[in-house]
Length: 139
Ligand SMILES: NC(=O)c1ccc[n+]([C@@H]2O[C@H](COP(=O)([O-])OP(=O)(O)OC[C@H]3O[C@@H](n4cnc5c(N)ncnc54)[C@H](OP(=O)(O)O)[C@@H]3O)[C@@H](O)[C@H]2O)c1
Image 1 (tube, protein in one colour):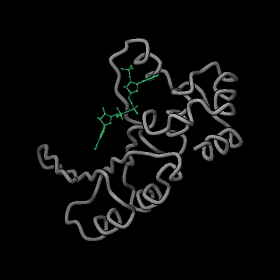
Image 2 (image 1 turned 60 degrees about the vertical axis):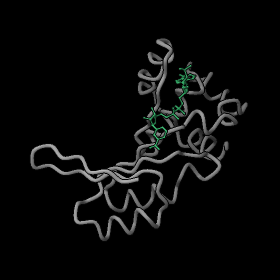
Image 3 (image 1 turned 45 degrees about the horizontal axis):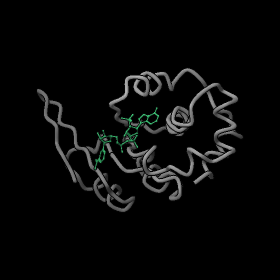
Image 4 (image 1 turned 90 degrees about the vertical axis):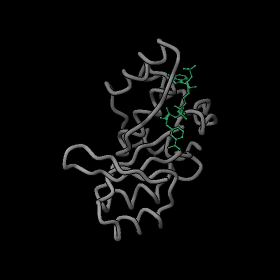
């Protein structure tokens, strides 16, 4: 899926559910620079590493969706829950912060006000390199 948003003279091209090869092709050929890529981000696929690498090369914002729903095993992984406990955070907050520290823009949605407050508060802490490595391979 692709979309062009036009506001005044600013035109932004976004692509969703794309492979690394598709992002590379778009970045190299599209008349309008690709600004955003939005993908379902699976832990067991290296948290979409190949696509994120191409985004980094081309200064494209990588938006990750389904970080929770696609990665249930990560949320109950004992090493992950131990890190969450150490930081006084929920596993969901840990995954969102992990994604941010890897350079992703996490997307989520909730009908639960307490989840929304939790999700919005996922920024006020930092995971160290060892913790990032554990979460990186937890899928
Ligand atoms: N481009 C595409 O093809 C595409 C496809 C799908 C989604 N998206 C976008 O991505 C966004 C997020 O996708 P997603 O819904 O798959 O995200 P997600 O973060 O994996 O899942 C959201 C679900 O997790 C629950 N949740 C949220 N915060 C939580 C928390 N702190 N603790 C426990 N559970 C929590 C919510 O349930 P509760 O209501 O119970 O909190 C909701 O059902 C969507 O809103 C949409 O904008 C794009």
